[in-house]
Amino acid sequence: MSRETLLQESKTMIDDLLQAANGLIEMANGELVDLGEEPVEVQVLERQPEQDPGIDLAELEAQGLYEAQLQEVELGLKDNLPVQLYAQNCYNWMQMKEIRLGMLAKVDVKWYTNPLYNAEQMHQIRLGLEYGLDVSGYARLIYTVSDMYKRRHVLMEEKYRSGGGGQERIILDDFTRIQLRLSADLMEAWITLPKTDGRSYTIAELRRLLKKYEVRHGIQAEGLRQATIEDARGNEILIARGVPAMPGRDGHYELFFNRELPDAPELLADGSVDYTHVIVADTALPGQKLAQYRPAGRGKPGMTVTGIAIDGARGKELPPLTGSGIVADHENRIYSAAIKGYVTYDRESSKLNVMQTYLVNGDVNSYTGSVVYDGTIHVSGSVSGKARICATGDVIVDGFVSGGTIEAGYNVILRGGVNAAEQGSIKAGGQIMGKFFERANLVAGGDIEGNYFLDCNVRSEGKVVAKGGKSRIMGGEMTASAGVEAKIVGNYGSTKTVVVVANLYELTEQLQDIKERQKKVASEQEKLAEGREKLEKLIAEGAVSDQRIYQKILQAAAVKQNEWTLLEQRMEHLKTVKKNAMLASVNVLKELRPGTFITINGVTKMITEASPGGTLTEKVLLDKKK
Image (tube, rainbow, N blue to C red; front, side, top):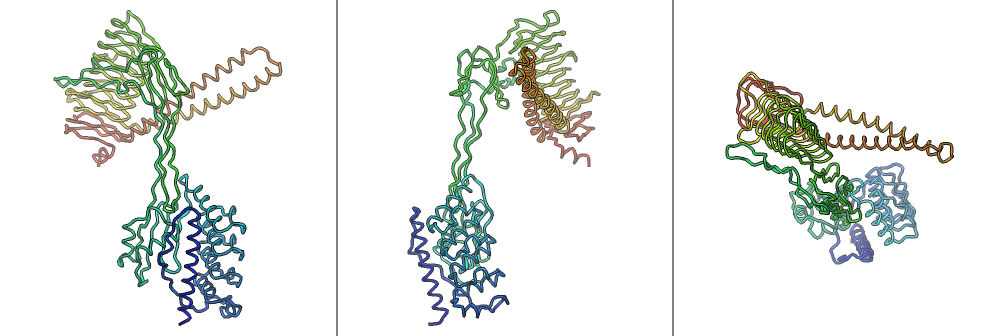
């Protein structure tokens, strides 16, 4: 029997013993291991000529190093490693191998070069270093291999459980020359079989190799099959894929009132849109349950290819609701109506309000005077002259509007339409909806909808939409951040129609202005806080007895805090407006008429001849200019 054959059999026997020992360790950790699988065939590496003049292999052999030890030295020389660190008789060949593999992986092998560590202890320390773990907690002689294994896995779970990662690992198996690549998050593993090996591998052998390197979860049957095909040699194959963790459901408020309001207007037989029966908001009675908070859910755990469970992130929680006209059960997060009124809910600002309604039976005009109310105003008649209507909630007008000023914190519903002859204005924090708009000045934080717009001056931070069979925009100027939609845009007469959408530059300036104002408010708040602290100290020392100044400081601080809150809300609103503006377009459903000027994000196009409908974007306008 040749020397190489004896060496081969010796190594195979040692590998079998090591496998059995590893199996006992794994079973001690609650894992079932099949020790009956055939071992992976081992290749005997031919002796290479001496490569490092600093290492004399003959001298090492004379010192008593046996064949397997010398082979580890030669392998290190081949990879240009500083083999002097382990080319000593105090290490057996398995210990040498662990040090050599650590050097190849570029880890700090000094953690385990103590020859009193056995090879399996060195193996556990090396793996920890390769995974980027802090091995100082278990790289000690007092710990057995089983102890080290457990501690390493605890550290790995801590590192990867929350979705963190280390660095990509590339492993080259010494005997088979099969390369295994693990992603940094351990969620994928790829295998590459040597091109010039000349031998075939069974699925069972590949499974055992994966298990050797702790790849045991999400193994791909198709990847295993491909890896056994000769044509796949040299190609990287996905061999295992972990299960990604899924985030939990976000916290949300379950609403017990009709949120789908204002409801859609009715389309009449003649093609026009009827706003007569539009309901602006749901009505609540005292004690009526309006909302209840449902906490965020736990995420669904995932698992890496090495079997580490990954926590699914918990969903995002929402802040408590605030507002007027409501009663809060903070323990159960239940919100009920305190009064009878219209219900409004703003998810962005976490505001829930029940607004009392002030009903005006009849018209509002120059003779009746102004109507100002902290809540919702409902006018059963018409609005004309120099009348002024101002509400913190909604404004609803059943009749026509032919003049006057209307301001609403939320929505404005004009069921009869507007013919203002350029007198007065209509302003809403939310939507403006009306049957039609002629020569009106409109400003809205949301969408503006009507059958048609004639010679109007309109500014909307949402969309301007002309609905129904008479859907058209003729004359005037429309500025809408999120876009404009109508069947017909423009007029064949001499009246110019201007449509401006996606005013990103203007929105960016507004956001910058808010930031500057926030800086100023923050500075003023800081000065007030310093003044309050100094005054509190003087009061405590008895140097000041009159607390009127202190009360004024508190009042000023409350004012500044409210100012800051309003700026924050405006900032969030404008961010949403800007996001929508980035997708804005002018959608002409039927005809675009000459004399119309279209501007999208600063790019302007004058329409000189009638054209069929289409969707105009910034890119389309730029292409038309070429």
